[in-house]
Image (cartoon, rainbow, N blue to C red):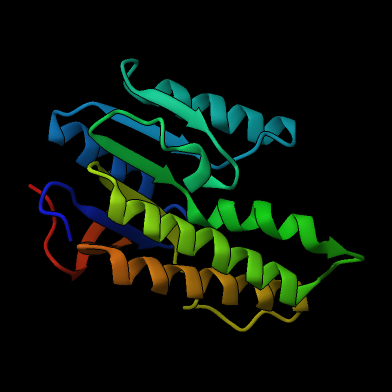
Length: 187
């Protein structure tokens, strides 16, 4: 791992404080920040959420909205810190390309997820920025009763494991409290 940069993976459940903590870490660094958002405004409610999140970020931060093929599109980022929020929506965006009649064409979808995350992991090793990556931990609940949910859970679980291997620090958020799983939290 290059000593000039650090990779932090923040995991947790929905509304656990992952994104807020990522933003706090980036602000505390005092460095220039790019916020890389994977959410897509596919309906009015999501559009309002995206607008609200934009308003909560410091105005000097650069924001890029990239729903997939992240590694190929982010080489131009010149800031010191990048927040990638979030892997869960990235995988949702990919999955929706492989859904027909409420079923996921599993093999090509999982191959696409592996390609996307492997390319991102390789890209992270080559960059000189600090990366703060946000993802949901979806493996703590029940096994989904439908194929799409099971495939989705499996894809996110694999992606989280892959990114955790690359990360210097892995945090798990519970009720807004970060717990260190690997490494140590930034100061």
